[in-house]
Length: 316
Image 1 (spheres, one colour):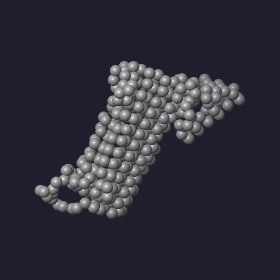
Image 2 (tube, rainbow, N blue to C red):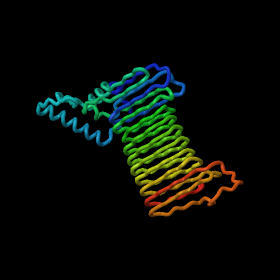
Image 3 (cartoon, rainbow, N blue to C red):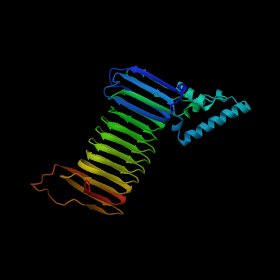
Image 4 (cartoon, helix red, strand yellow):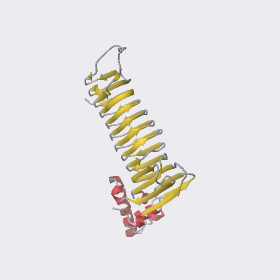
């Protein structure tokens, strides 16, 4: 359901190339769409109230604001005089949402777009849906207290910090993601990537640039890997489905590690498990035969405190 017009703003800005995009909100959702051709000379942004995007703690805070407004009306307390609180007597949730949208900062200067939610406590309880369209190659920075972040298209540098989920079509330049509780999904990793997660899982489809992943209690799954991959899990499984090149340094406290090695690729394997089994289904040789036609080498180091570690042929 779309927001009423009074709860929605949109603006457009001309650009001659990739832009710098900075979005800072407390709750809601952030969608960034990077276009290769259509709209390549324009940056557009839409901000709308997103009542369905409020997590539990935001709804609880909104309830406190409503209660404070009621107390103000009943006892004549002037809460509006308290700097930064932003409570208004008899203001309905709809009116508060419209005010939050109106007071959201949308600024464009020297090729940089900045979107920032209001700082008053009452308005920070309003989740905002922010949708940005910009040229391909634009740098993306998102700081969100509780919001899923979705970046479609080919970005420049990416920096995301949120407790919600994160989804990127690809990374092309150096990128960093910090995610408190949501899942992280990246399609193609074509630029160096660092992911720091809390309780969510991490999914990487194709890896052709170096990746470092650190999670607290989430599992990590990578599809095709042809570059260095370092993974540290407090607890969670680590799975690489098809490794053809690179150094793989994988460890977990409580979970399994499994690596599939691409057909025709040699593997240097070093596996250890304190409370589990370490096995390899690959043929073992102390030296490489001079007639070996393998296309490359992948180096695998796997460490598990409580769980099995295993190397297999990809697809097995």
